[in-house]
Length: 121
Image (cartoon, rainbow, N blue to C red; front, top):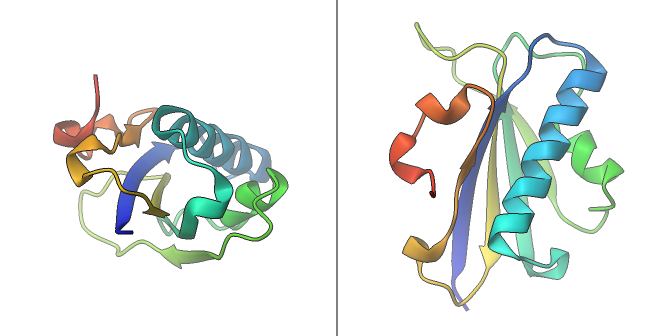
C-alpha cells in the first residue's frame, strides 16, 4: 500500500498555548474529516511552526485528541524573508490506496495563500 501525504496549514492570532493548540486541533480535525482516514492508517505526522511560535509544541494538540500511538515530530520552519508569520504546517503520512490526486489538502485562517493550487473546492 502506498504512503500519501496530506498537506495542511493554519495561522494563529498570537503565540499563546490555547491558540496554538486550538488552531492545530481544528486543522487536524478538518484534515481527517475531508480525507476520512482512521488513526491506524497514519504512518506519521510532521509539524512545522514558524520561529514566532514557541509557547507549545503543535503536536501536543494531536496527543490531546487521542493520537497516542501515532508518531509525531515537530520542527521549526525555515526562516525565509516575507514568509507567512505565526504559521503551523502539517504533513500527515497516510497509508492508503488512494491516488495522490484524490487527497484533499486543507489550508485555514490566512494560510490559503500558501498553496491555492492544493485547496479542494
